[in-house]
Length: 328
Image 1 (cartoon, rainbow, N blue to C red):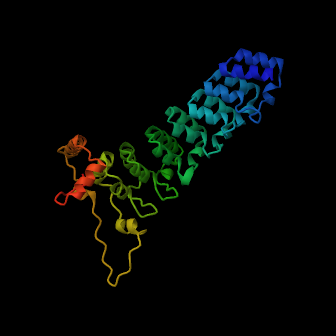
Image 2: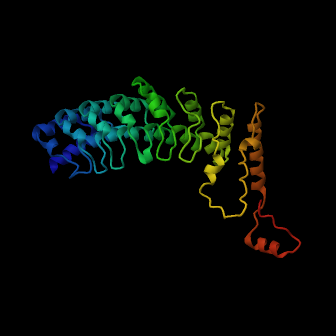
Image 3: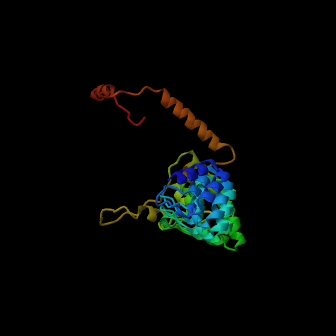
């Protein structure tokens, strides 16, 4: 065990000289190392610390360790992708290209981890170019790598992946792919109110701006029926001014399909759904900025008002000539 302890200490320090001395004393030590007995291999530890030369030395002595998982099911390539160590990624891919398609216990490929952790975009490019097949993989609920990019608001990764896909003549195939909910990446960008990503996607010639999901809703429908905070209103304003995007023709039916109406002899026709376009039509005269200022002023007034205690409310309710306005 003393030899193994020295090996792990060398991995922590990235001490290549110590590694070589240990191997010289015990040529089979790297063959005996396994995450079955240790939580991480020396290669995992060296990668966590970013020790490139140590990782190279380990791979040179025993390439098999590139395919050894830790207790979380992470290969060394998963760890390097999470940390963004592009030089180590290059070495690992050279030794074991199949690691690009290996899934961890939570079903993630190295490319998925690089996108979700927001590491340098060069890491995403390295992994995508090394194994284009990894860009076609799906994750939870049928999401593609582009869905994952939108989920983590990683516009740089979207641009790199589309660039690599276009080099493979496969760019438009992922643009309009639907997940299990029928949502494209444009739907997801609208749901999460990512304005810059939405602008970028609508500028791509191959995008389908009026694609409908499983509920028959377009991206515009989703924004109109989402919480109306400032981000939502800015995105709604942009979409309403866009000539390429429009509402679905069955928005009311789709939104009310799950509501059971009581039977009547003469069922009433559903009233047309109100659109926020009726209330907010922003022009070029800074109306959106005016809205921000009104909202700010209203918040300041509300903050300045005293809050009635429970006892004060009871007194007010008991007074017949006093109307308690609880809507404030």
